[in-house]
Amino acid sequence: MRAVVAVIGKDTVGILAKVSGICAECRANVMDVTQTIMQDLFAMTMMIEISELTIDYVDLADKLTKAGNEMGLQVHVMHEDIFNAMHRI
Amino acid sequence: MLNSGDILETIKMIQEENLDIRTITMGISLLDCIDSDEDRACDRIYEKMMRKAENLVRTGEDIEKQYGIPIINKRISVTPISIVAAATRSKNPVKFAKTLQRVAEGTGVNYIGGYSALVHKGFAAGDLELINSIPEAMAETSNVCSSVNIGSTKAGINMDAVSMMGKVVYDAAEATKDNFCFGAAKIVVFCNAPEDNPFMAGAFHGVGEYDTEINVGVSGPGVVRAAIAKHPEANMTEIADIIKKTAFKITRMGQLVGTEASRRLGVPFGIVDLSLAPTPAVGDSVAHILEEIGLESCGTHGTTACLAMLNDAVKKGGVMASSHVGGLSGAFIPVSEDAGMIDAAVCGSLSLDKLEAMTAVCSVGLDMICIPGDTPVDTISAIIADEAAIGMVNSKTTAVRVIPAIGMKEGDMLEFGGLFGSGPVMKINKYSSSKFISRGGRIPAPMQSLKN
Image 1 (cartoon, rainbow over the protein chains, first blue to last red):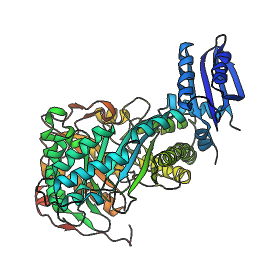
Image 2 (image 1 turned 135 degrees about the vertical axis):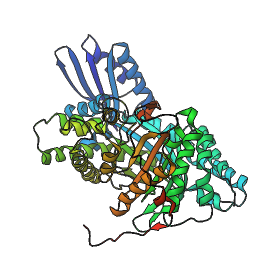
Image 3 (image 1 turned 180 degrees about the vertical axis):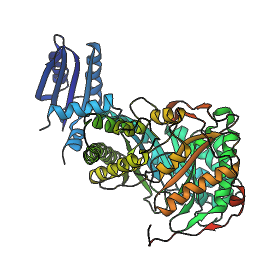
Image 4 (image 1 turned 180 degrees about the horizontal axis):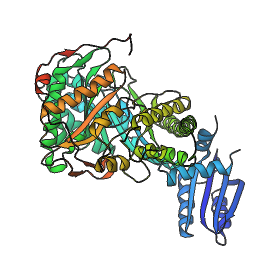
């Protein structure tokens, strides 16, 4: 099972480190990262493996969202099924 | 592999364009709760509903977190109470409404639908008692909704029931006049009522359904409007295609959420209602879609044509995205719940007559329309009869949910707040329909051939 972590907000030092740090703590393996910076807007999508999490998926989502908010970023953690459902036939 | 364009598109739909799951509705059959003793029947209803829906709200919230998609309402629909209450021979089934209210409070769902009767041909035991008790039941409860089916394509229109419902709607408004006449906003009068509708106030659980099931209603007028806005030069063929593609994506999400809810709750998945359900929030309006297509204001000439195309495209796009489609399926045009409709009604562009024409090509009917407080009950009945005739002849569902604004006159604003918004009191025809309504009887079922 995989989930998508999308981070959007003003670029600053340590965003990737912070997000991937939390993922590592909870044993969520980072499988893919795409990031772009448009003017000074940071947009990152990260695919993580969530089969071996040490905490509940919902708690991980809360943790990441909270950490994002502290850095002034919007973080969305969404199960990959929603994207597959919407964008694949 | 997913690409980040798709991911960002989905997030944008949810964040900026108000994409959401409007409702997860659990349908629960109460047929096995029937008892000749009223108290015992109510106890069994309470016990069964609390057991079946115990985890409904929490499961909805968990799914919201898992997929990052808002699920606005969690609701329950039940077997029409007229059927359940008939065995008690009770003259006043309000006790059943109060039981449903207790379940709403106990489970945390925001509405329970099914204080209903199906009388499209005639009245059976329990029907008259239930209909007569609706105003009191609506005044005594805050989260219970009522609906009455007074006509169908196969049975015609029960004009005795139409006559009664005009008074019921008025009395419900009168009984709740200190609370924005809200009683009337919880009553829907149907022709061809669907038995698996997840949307309030008209939801009830038909007798042909599963014992318990999950039905889902989606929403996304903002997403459709934004998609059209990206193509200012598109012709109508292209716009219909854009709407189909968008409706497909919206409905797939509903299918996913419904399947997941049914799995987690251990009950069968019924249907997805392919709906465009607006809210008063900015950017969540069906009227604004029509205006984006090219109408200066919703209600002007061309509105019916645009709405017909929109409604059809939503169904065509949605039907492939879901394994089972049902409910009302189509674009909703409630006046008070749609910022664009409110503006159009206030500026005079949108009239009751135009709304009636629009209901001939879209999914529901005259919905959340405020009418003057001194409207005669026979006129309300005649509005119901007109709308039922459109549904009956066109083999579609139509409904009437009008709110007599007690003490108010044309042009005043009735404010409900929240998802229900606010509605301008609309102009109605001042000439009488009393003689017609007083005749009673039944309008015979229409021909289904020689269509013209």
